[in-house]
Image 1 (cartoon, helix red, strand yellow):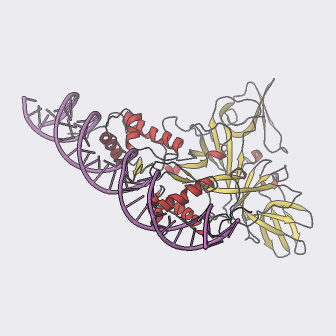
Image 2 (cartoon, rainbow over the protein chains, first blue to last red; image 1 turned 90 degrees about the horizontal axis):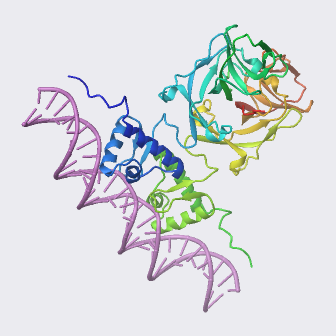
Image 3 (cartoon, rainbow over the protein chains, first blue to last red; image 1 turned 180 degrees about the horizontal axis):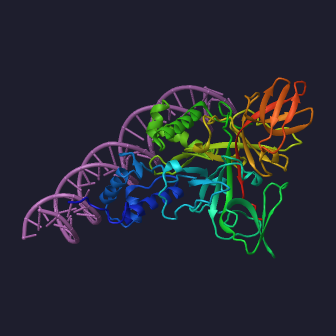
Length: 225
Length: 225
DNA sequence: CTTGACACAGAACAGGCGTTCGAGTATTAT
DNA sequence: ATAATACTCGAACGCCTGTTCTGTGTCAAG
């Protein structure tokens, strides 16, 4: 005898669809949808069935419900709500270690290992969901004007345009660093953000792995030591 | 002939009370109150009267309403919603100019001149509403690991404990700077965040005006120049 | 085949809620 | 005083919405 297994992993396709609809509806209307609206947009013809799924989503902790209250549902915790962007903290970044890129599978990161950033703070159209964050360990990034304990938000990338700040792994030197990237005739120039410091010049033969572009740096100054 | 004047300034006492109730109710229940609930808690015995005030608040731009939708009201713009903190941008900070402290009157800052920061990002109990933000202009703060264009979030303060990062105005030198603050026997030591740089030593006779404590630094790296 | 858990449909019910209307009172302008 | 405006009340209307109940089809275990 064995436990019943859900069709696909944790959530059925319909659960996911409802979840997505609630999110998009809320973004557009500023308030949650009604049960009937969910039914219409998710091809469910009966309110009781929607209710049925909503109950399951509540039990599994994906939403909260205020029974009896109209549209009294809301996405819980790990779903970015409103104008917030939730970014997974996928580890630390330091000079001597490679960059931990988050496993590209789904948003299965817990609320504890992530940070929230207001949409309005995000530059341009980086509102993509593939951003990730790293905590800086050590003073090795001071030439990038980044301190020990700072949080850097990155967008995964394998290449970059000139002038963009990138996180690179120099396998020949066993070194991770954050620099402005410039491709030149004879190789690459990695320019520190601090104008008083000199660039790293790389020949074309030296390996240079771009891991991501720096989108934002956040420093909490609560070290009341 | 003259325009009708509202009883007290812009908003009547009852308008303010309704606004406050909506805010507190939303914080507690995660969704807006109904018209009847507003009536009960604001000592208004008729739903039509609540509706009457809600209409006015909508016209004056304090709330938005989704008519016909249950609890379809929301506080607009300058009211921080959910887990967001809205911080006024009160100007720029640069070496040669004093720090523009926001006029301490009410939260009458527009949405454009402010930034939003997630509560969860805020250190400790800085959730106070008296924070303000400044945009760094120029490279004069590089010794504080702060770049041109960075945003610093400050908490107003006139004094500081040792080790705290403060924004100070040195009137004798006509200089604004961000440094770690240490009081010593013979005066003050202002320590740059960049460990490779030397501190500023001040004698007790030199004027030192602490304007605020640095709470957070945010750097948007969207200069795809 | 029977059983039972699961997914789904449809209808009916009851209460919540925004809206509207008629009417009364207070405040202020003319 | 008179009229206009602001404010308040209570009740009724009707839609919107969550809930519940009955019934159907599927599929795997016993």
